[in-house]
Image (cartoon, rainbow, N blue to C red; front, top):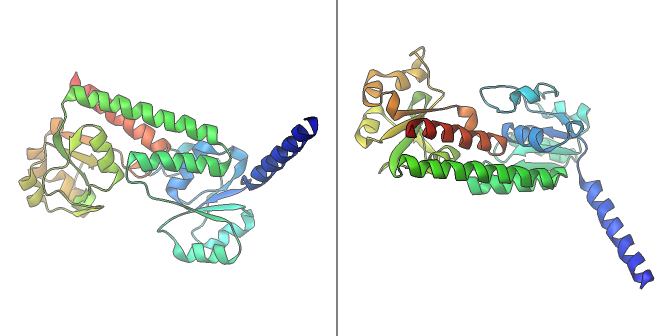
Length: 278
């Protein structure tokens, strides 16, 4: 019996050593969403470099923490001096860089663009496992679930099935297959009939006024028409149709990525609804 216990212990030790060998010790990220996941889930000494956008507070909810780490140039060659054992890239971004780094033998993992809360939860779990910290991933998933439940409960108090469209500079409307729309849906809103499908597209102001959503959700709305992109969101016709009580302002950094940004986005929208319930 003791002999079998010894054999089992040796096998378990071997499995643990193999697993430990797979845990990355020098991580480089070329992707904004990967930056935030790494900053939230990895040890600080695991992070060798982050993308050029990592410390931009308009894009990342982890910008302040990112300032402590080196930022890459966009060229793949900037990775080589950092000697990473894991490089994170987006699925659709920088194909030439991915091919170069793959040809050089670097271990590459792609970070998918998440478009709903379920895929964001799965991404957190997978990334935490990859980085060697599954318990941190489980904790973040619990935080996502708690924030989502709170928002759902508040949506019930505020009244469901009001229509809403997410708009950004230049009149781009988020489609139904986007994280922004998933967030708005979690808050109890539904898209109006004939809303843009998929990832969305340009919506002429005249069409918006015909669709007549009950609310517009404005990403980082400008205060004045200082350029062509800002003109749409500051147009007198839009402001007349949608006074402040029919607008919800949504910081763009909350609707770009899952992970820690998703928790903040759910909490933010919960606070917006709570203010309206009062």
